[in-house]
Figure 1 (tube, rainbow, N blue to C red):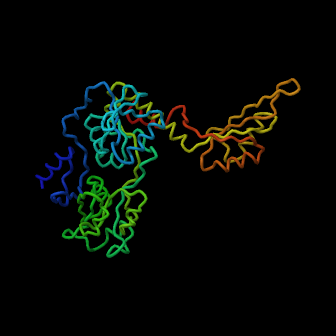
Figure 2 (figure 1 turned 60 degrees about the vertical axis):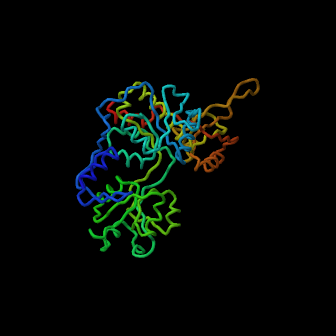
Figure 3 (figure 1 turned 90 degrees about the vertical axis):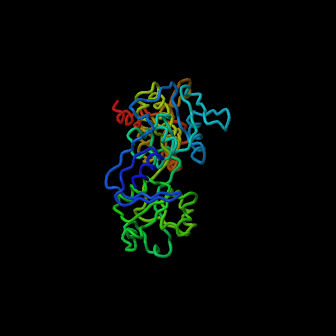
Length: 391
């Protein structure tokens, strides 16, 4: 057992607590179950001495393949931070608007590992990847926790048929009398840290985890696992393979996040300022994504009278209230204001209702414009980041 622990620690570059139940190893899998003590990640590559790797550029890790790679490039483009890659086969690129930033395309799990080793300073990956490969390391800091793509959940799934037909919750699964030390519940997963951690936190016993390549959904049907722990988006693949999620079986909800090395933000020149700019661009774009600017004209004797009418409607309050300004025209040789222009921001889902309410109080000439950015005086996430850094 100690021989395996050493081998596993070297392979993953982290230290694990000694298992309190049992560990088993096969040629292409490992099984690790339930520790009675908390683990604390320890990187053993020699770079965790409190100092950052000496270089001038700020390294930004982005996913190299898959849907998240494309969605990440789209987000950056929408924020006027387009990535320029001379050769699509190259793993290094630039963002012209951020002259001190060097983009590195990597596998998501390698982005997290290289943030920990000091080879990257910033990265975009799924929250599930941060938690699985970061293992709670305090040097990893979430800068933006909701980039609004890559949505999924890490969830436990069991067959719909056989002995599991009437099992619909984690509690019912745990209480099945068939699970013993000689015949444990077998769970196939690629999440070899979050899986055992979840089982331990929920008090399940007699559970073993094994890694598996390829589609995990086939494992129960092939008889090599009783359940799987995997990422689920729509759930269609589970249903097509006669599997079901159960109540209490969701390990975590995940989406794309912006993550950084704490040490890099504090010690590397320009890293914090660059992170501030990226964060502000993300926040401004994401906040504007579901908002429309509505402009209309209304008759009134004063701006205050018009504002009072607008604010009497629940969908017309805008972000901080309506902007009301006079529409000036020349009549009988004099400049007068019979109309006032109203400008408000409304959510996409309330757009038509807002137009109806404007018409009801005399609004006309209603114009609708999509918004690209909404910059706050200061983004709350920036204040949170400074607080996490102790600045």
